[in-house]
Length: 337
Image (cartoon, rainbow, N blue to C red; front, side, top):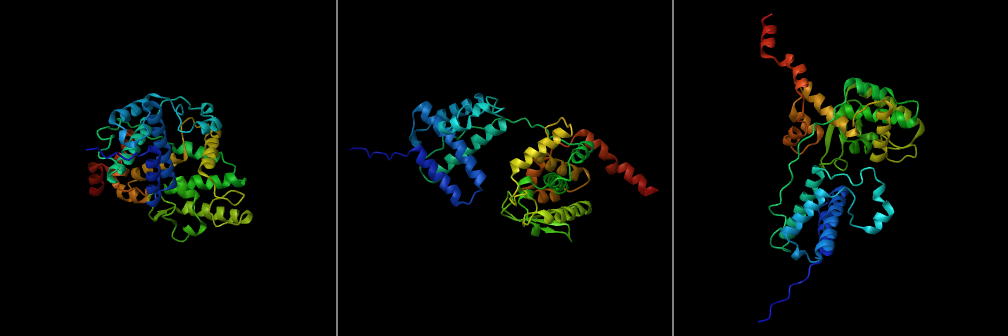
């Protein structure tokens, strides 16, 4: 009896179906873009090296080979689109050829697992070729810290007589006082701010977890926000809290670029980014006696476990400085007197 011929499943077509499913599930654009870019790299490698164009013929050995290749190759030395490479010229990048980080490598592996599990669920393939391929152990690097002296020096070096530096000065202070993400901060509208209760509504359309949440700010920050709003309204008409002079939303990349200029201007010899302010907010919140459960809510984490993992690097020196407040003997002695 003649065998029934198997239907060919072209890698590119299957990948397109997967991306469309991500759109249907309403995943964030950045997430979909990351899936697409990393998976296209994988598909290009499988086609170039193994001459395989049918998804059913991808094996675990091929996947392992790709993972090892990705680990050993340099950044941007392999691209999914040679035409774009001619335009973007990756060789001109400062990090061209540098080692791919373990965290990035693990993200690639995770994306491949998600992709092939999707194909198993859809009964496109019977078994995922990524089964049994483990993530690489990632030795955790403690998060950068900015000292009080460095922070004060940083904000002192901003020229608040200029529109964009006064705006960035206010953003930096708000990030340090609330712990919100830079993307959330730049998407804020004036109506999201409650000046009476000193709270900010982070709408679900701008949060990473797609849920509304509130953050709170201090009395000092309240005065800064009022000054900024009065100043902004003199020159720009927009419902955005922070904007360019052209009335547009400030891009994260533009703020990060400005931020690095301020760090350099203040002669801070550390790798400090806007996200470091969020890290420092969390650390200082915990050291001041704040609850990790409250912190998890304020940061918008999916669980307390995520918060514990992210901020598990409070130093011995931090604990030493704080210990006197928590010493049982010291507290009992105070009660006696």
